[in-house]
Length: 206
Image 1 (spheres, rainbow, N blue to C red):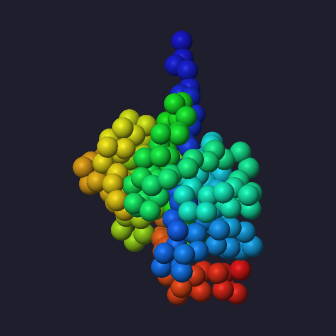
Image 2: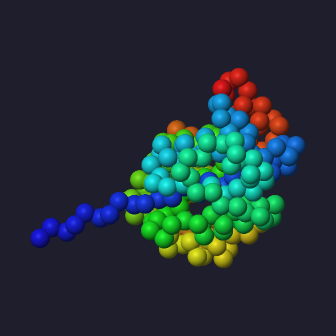
Image 3: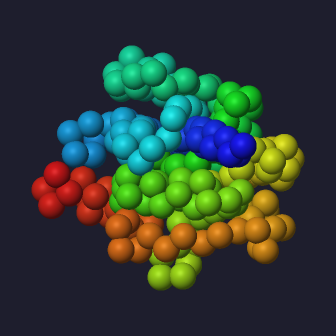
């Protein structure tokens, strides 16, 4: 009797979109327009096109405006009232909302518009091949997105503080972390300053 085929991985995209854009003059990053739509819409579209089966967006600054103006589709939105304390609180809030059946969460920052569906798909392929921790690599350097297997959710929640996010988790398990090179299909830079904003949202960026 043949062994049954393994169940397909169910990976939830976890879009961290709570930041207030302090260095951008207080413009919430989720609502900055990129290629004709808010960054949060762009990030969700990238995650879906890359193969994630469900999406969760963690909102903080201007969260009601984000809900009212952004087309979020079937995305589950989670409020992080502690968003000003840093990325760690958003990661904890998002993981708590991931459905129990998910095999992993793909953590995608809303302010990394250079991440592409191809990069997401490579991380999902690494997970399907057995990786429980994976991160996009850019010329050998770790970047985003980051994939966290369900077995690591509790540890991530206990160690994600301030702006460190999953850094402590990944540092604690270097032997389990698979670096997936994505430098040929994506770019890791974030949108954090007025100069970044001009570069990403100017005429050349569309």
